[in-house]
Image 1 (cartoon, rainbow, N blue to C red):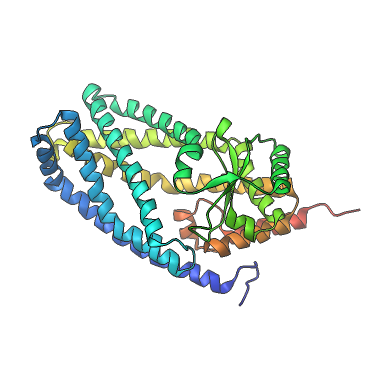
Image 2 (image 1 turned 90 degrees about the horizontal axis):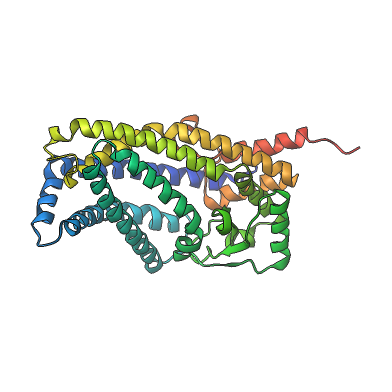
Length: 381
């Protein structure tokens, strides 16, 4: 087993690159299928679906809800083979998952149900806004979206995450105290330290600070507790606590709100200018909404690299805070190497890959940051 100059296992890195290549190729195929689906909808498929939904002896709101439900179900069905290959088969083939097919299918069913409910409610609300305020609907939709994002950040750790993983208070009292003291040193109040039962489904490991206010808690996967030393876990937790200390979740919400406002405003302009040319009856024609989704996706993708660059800046600051707080660069380096090893991440991506896909500093850069901290740290005496 070879190890490179930064401590990364060369065999695991080859596997990571192989998996990355497979997933990118598959994602291109999936993008092609999605585009064909949208073309079919915009060429008349959504009008046929709308006519069918309205022909049923149902109240208008129920016909609209059925339209959105069927549209979402077809999209989910088209995406299922890709999700199965990438999220189940390859995860098991590359040793990242030990989840059986029944458990995986149950998780997908839960995700489908949550997504279906969200799409139906969002679609119905959006149609109402388009009808009630055709000139300013996008401002109201944006404001509602910000409120929903804030609510999900608060209730997600309590209501949604337990649907997929088991959580319990960390049983090791000494470790619990140690991590609570770390949070106190970082001046980030938390309501508790929890263990997430990830090992029943995955070999991946991670730690996080989840929630806002009274739902904010430290969460550590049982896989990390089993494979990492307390010192290594501390460096990962200190990184996560830095985000809370510097109000990164709140700043992320504010910046995300700004980005979504830009996306919605530009998509609304394009939508208003083109919907009639494609044969849709009105601005609030339910059949036209896939066109609005397409415009929103195009603008979002165009802004993606800038958002990722900003994210990498925040993540780099959190790494520096972790090193300053724990004063243990060797444990930090070891934790970064293990994260790449366990989670099969590419530690040294090409510049264009980093620019297009990476929200964090690559693993090699994080190790180099720790080594530079060693060289600049004051010596004893």
